Length: 353
Image 1: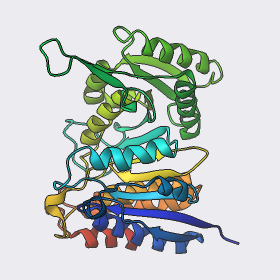
Image 2: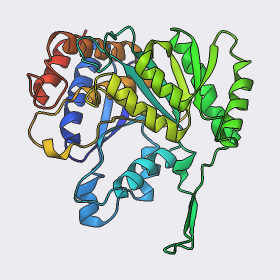
Image 3: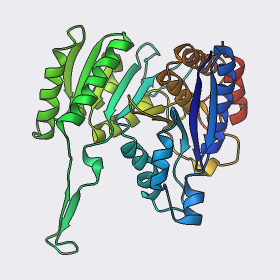
Image 4: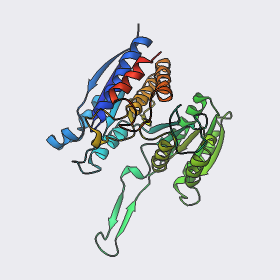
């Protein structure tokens, strides 16, 4: 008997509903090919709901989401809402409240996709960033001293716990082992300046490495990582880093893999419910025009299928995306693909195997 997955869908803001629609189209087709079933429930959390109710995400929603196998998110952000309200009230609340302590970001150049890195090919850009997702500078701890005066001091606390750091690092080692490519894990930090937090990270990393003798390990400062991502991205297999550095280097990663139109991410709770999303944002100026690229959302669907254990279905989706980028699209940019949003989604669905 085939398994039935419960999937929560948050289409969100701007072009989010448009790209989610294409992802769900692919899900419907690949589920028939692979023989699994699913139940969807859509939620209206986002800008429109906030503007009507002044509520972003009720606490009761967290308990409801825990009953699902996965969350599929479109986009968050609306120019009518002050920056930070939706991002903190929805995205961060879900990540922290559901203990999604890993942010997983594949950086992979697909066939036919332009990269700003001269002479680099798909075989050169294929690595994954494992970002700690629940601690660091993003916990919101800090204070003002003498605010509004000439002596004002602003303190922002980066909180790193042994438990939080170790679970992230061990996840990265296990992921590197399962990925089974170069079997190389790079710790990305700043041990020469951030001597407290990164002393903890480095000690924990070196201790955990003893349990994974088949994994090659190395370390690089975050500024060096940025340089090598541009100069020699083939050096990397898997990187593990903290919340803020991960946030920064994954955007650089998105650019070298062809842009936000192809970049997807997962917010992972290995023992609970995880959430998957395109990372390009809501792109409000393209809303309703049927020109936005849906491939990042479809790649997020592929990540969700892998997390659910449907590896063959996930590979089918990825193979179809690679066929479409390599054989069909003129560009990944909105309005320049040579096809509409819905037509791109149709191409992916038609070429599933």
